Image (tube, rainbow, N blue to C red; front, side, top):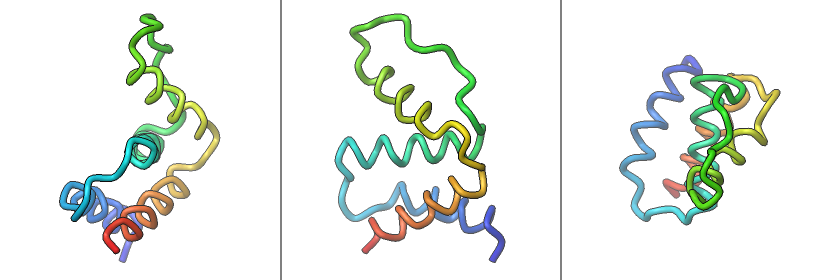
Length: 85
């Protein structure tokens, strides 16, 4: 199967996981998804220092800077498959 097809299937599967992942895993999924679909981070850091969720999401995505979309897709697929058990 083509990587894009496998990625789209993993995105669908991620919404139907048997157990809700913890916050760290959710941040991993978020950042890998954003890197896969948009590439390197392209937004400004959150202005509100007390918006901890936005800051965590920004930081997680920013840490993937330079990772190729294909590599991020494969990591996303692997993570979702691991979570599916």
